[in-house]
Amino acid sequence: MKDSIRAKTRSVLLTAALARNILFSARLSDRFRRTTLVPPTAVARITNPSICLVNSQWLVAARAPKFSVNRDGSYRLDDGVDRIDSDSIVLRLNSSLATECHSVLSLPTAVEGQRVSFEDPRLSVFGDRTVVLWSALRAESALDTPPQVHSSYLPNWDGASNVMAIAGMDETSISAIRQINSPFGRPREKNWMPIVGSAYPEFIYQAFPGVHVKAREDKLIVEEVASVSELRGWSGSSQLVPWRGGWLAVLHLAGRRAKAIPFLRRPVYLHRFVAYDENLRVSALSRSFRFDQLGIEFCAGLAVLGERIVLSYGRNDETAHLLEMDQPALEKMLRPVSSRLKPRTVKKRQHA
Image (tube, rainbow, N blue to C red; front, side, top):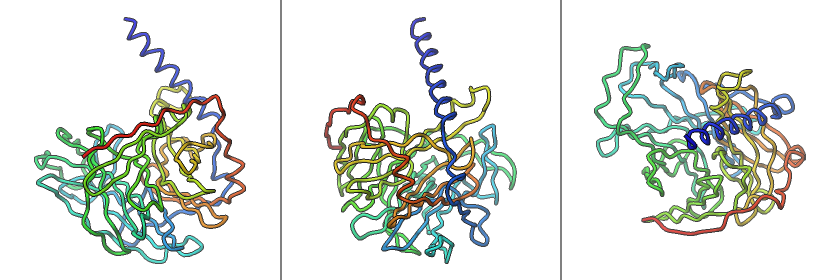
């Protein structure tokens, strides 16, 4: 009985906190220039774009889903494919952020007898290599037979799991894909944030408690790094990019509890900037913001060039957009972490 009351109280408090965040969130598209990324010819739509600066060149990786999701959780297949998956599209942009050309990355459809789909690519640079990071869905090969084209399909996900997958990339092809299993044995992995410019693949795995993962050839090195309680419930979104001697990132809060808020009744995703110092300790935060709407938005990319700061995001899993702001505007949004926020103790461990 007591556990039930505690759980209900916690749910009410979390919903109230989310409502407060939503009410005081700013809409960035009212203040800064927004650009819509137009899908290439023969591609129905792209979403959740990840922008990255590679040798002063703007590149974007985006997901081109071959399905849409209905409100009841069923999938609507666009072209009768025998599985649910997405293409990964890479766009080259000019200095005005207009698309110059594109390529479609060639990805495998099965690994070790399991169906694999690669979702939400994030671009990064490790050392001198351009790299793509995906959340890869692995499903048993004996999925239910899909329906005819354009009919709804509720798949059986028994035995499915998500791992991270990483590969080097040039603008038209990728190297061998390496799968990275969960360092904690979890069946669902996504939203790892690549640390752009690190010599080897490194990621912020979790915002609070802060977890830093280094991927080496034969092992993962996992350490807990100082974080702040204001990031409780927030998840990875963009990459970490070099900024002011440390790092800058965008995190997101998946506000599914907003369905219980009377004036919304739908999920709402919020974002915020987070600055890290050279030791990956949180040094500053912005307030929550949204890009265009109170609904589903997801920022998967961040790039900084001089005074230009460009964020890339998807909306409703249907469209792809860029938003550009300048350094003074960002600095006005950030506030230093106050002394009342207690950091977690740093711990290190290794996983084979």
